[in-house]
Amino acid sequence: MDPIKKEDVEHLATLSRIELTPTEAEDFAKDITNILGYVSEIKDMTGEETSEKKVGALFNVFREDGEPHEAGKYTEDLLALAPERQGQYIKVKKILDSSK
Amino acid sequence: MTIRSLRKKFLEGTYTPLHAYEEMRSVIDTRDGDIHAFLHVYDDAREAAIEATRRYTEEGDRAPMLLGIPTAVKNNILIKGKNATAGSKILENYVAPYDATVIARMKSEGLVFMGDTNLDEFAMGSSTENSAFGVTKNPIDLTRVPGGSSGGSGAAVAMGASVIALGTDTGGSVRLPASFCGIVGYKPTYGAVSRSGLIAMGSSLDQAGIFANTVDDAEIVFNVISGKDPLDATTIGPETYGTIPLKETYRIGVPRDFLRKGMDNDVLAVFEDTIKKLAEEGHEVVDVSLPLMERGLAAYYIVMPAEVSSNLARYDGVRFGLKAEGDNLLQDYRKTRAAGFGAEVKRRIILGTYVLSAGYYDAFYGKAEETRHMMRAELAEVYKTVDLIMTPTAPTPAYKIGEKADPLSMYLGDIFTVPINLTGVPAMSLPSGVVLREGISLPVGVQYIAPLGGDARLFDFGKKFHDD
Image (cartoon, rainbow over all chains, first blue to last red):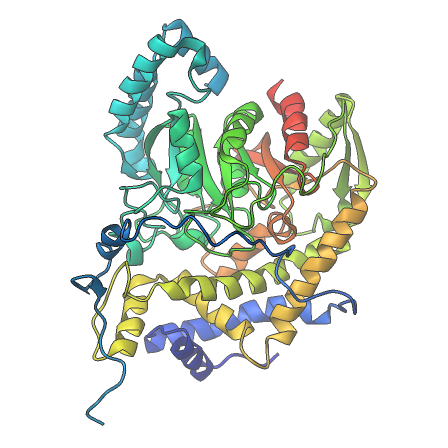
């Protein structure tokens, strides 16, 4: 199969929300080309018509939507882990830029 | 040192949990500077050992089976109030807000937690060289890797710093270190043990696993940590796969075609020798054909990175973990993940993003999942004629630190272990012999594989063949 290019890796990194250095992008292009070269043997598998593309031995597991814990029981423990908070909120930068 | 022999002494009072703690702590203090099995050594273990000692005098043989037994825990399993790093800078300062189910069950038995152990970052690796906090060395030969990703837990038991240890096994991460360190490594049937509180890597593959000196010890721990858990919807009960009967002697299949030419000759000799020993003890060893097993590695290195790319999306610098500042929210994400993840984690996230992207999904991920289903069917068919299947655990003994710099060459070492996680069956690595390298005897493991739900059968076989 065609080798993965540095630009392809940069695009995938954007989708994955990872900033890469040019050297990393170069190295990963080479590594991923090698790995895909190996795993591509999977394409020759002639899957049976009946085989299903689902993950694991699947069955649904439901439970009654009851017995909630008391409100706020874990709030402080979990908020304490946030890098930035304001009172009872986790603080993030604004997503919509109102100046534009 | 085994659980039963220690317990006997604890009950007699000739040797107490405090003695055991002090003995193992001194092993850590003298040897772990070189080996680096532990990321954190717990000073509060002493109080737990004192409490266990007190309880034995009070409760006698009513005391829980594992009371006072020193244990180590891979640092991707949450222990409330302790730092759970998963071997990653992105979780360097993360303090677990709750106990994993396996930990809660161990705490109710009163085990003594000696500390938590090093691992490849987010359990991604086969050598414990990929940790953000340094390499763990093999206690048998400090120039070699202990195997991975649960290398710290394997080394802890092998060096005598704990009687048992917990690891996680997504593609061999308990069985490989067990093989390289010369101890027992157990990977349960998928769903037998709760994943609640395990830092996720590949959720359809991950299972908590056990390191021990004997199969009996592994079984005792398994019986404590296994069972249905409302916090993990994939946990199974005894009814899920029905009873897999125990036997006096077992019929064991060897997938001959699967023993590739690339295997180390000395390892192969240990494997052949083990077959002879099995026959001498009355087990029947026969050849079986499992042509799809060989495809397991390719399917695994598609399915696993796909799941990794989704699971690790949660590390965004917003709710917990490291945060790096950018000009806007998107830059925050990108810089946080650039600074927090190591090379192998980035590589797998990007590979996973590729195999899941439109245009490639059917060719890669779709085919890999189909292969997985066909592998399950193939195994089920073979288990109509045999009770267990055996393979080497790894194609080589422990290799030198730094020897496998290229990712693909590292992946090839997982050839025998990944089909197990893809199909969900239970498997166990037993120390089976040694090979000589540079004057040092390096241990070699053999892997035994049971049908789904056949954990009790593996333990029964292992106790007869290994422990006795």
